[in-house]
Image (cartoon, rainbow, N blue to C red):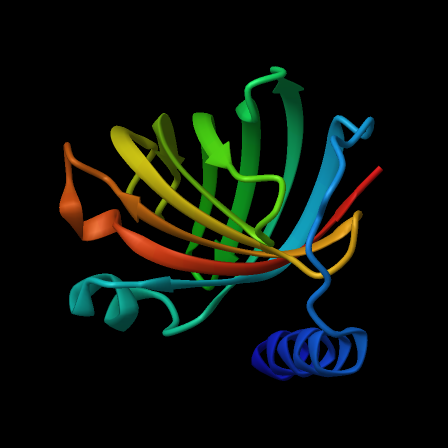
Length: 162
C-alpha cells in the first residue's frame, strides 16, 4: 500500500509542476469536489500501531456566498493497517478571488475503529487550499483531534471540483 501512496503523491507533484499555479478569478459553479492523498499521524504511538503514512480520500460539498466565504461539508476516509478512520467535518473558508489560496477552520467528528474497538472523538480541522486551475487544487489540513490528541494528524490531498 505504501508504494501506491508514493505513486499517488508523485502524480500530484508532476501534475502541479506541469500545470502551473493559476489564480482563480471567478466564482465557481461547481459545488462538489473529490480529494485523494495521504494522512500522516502526528502521534508516535499511533504510527507504531499502524503505519507512518495512511491512504486518505475525501469528498466535499460547498455552499458559497457572494462575500467570498464558503461553508463546506467534508467527509474524509483514512486507512492504514489496523485502523480505518471516518472524518465528518463542517468547515468555514475565506478566500480572495484575486489570490490562488484560501484558508479555513471547522469542527469535526472523527470515528476510528482500531482492532480494540470503535472510538469517536471531536476535533478541529485547519485548512489551506491552493488552486492550480478553476477545478484542480491542493489541500492541506491539520486535524487537531482535541478530545484525544493521539489521533491528530496532517493530510495533503490533490482535489478536483465538479
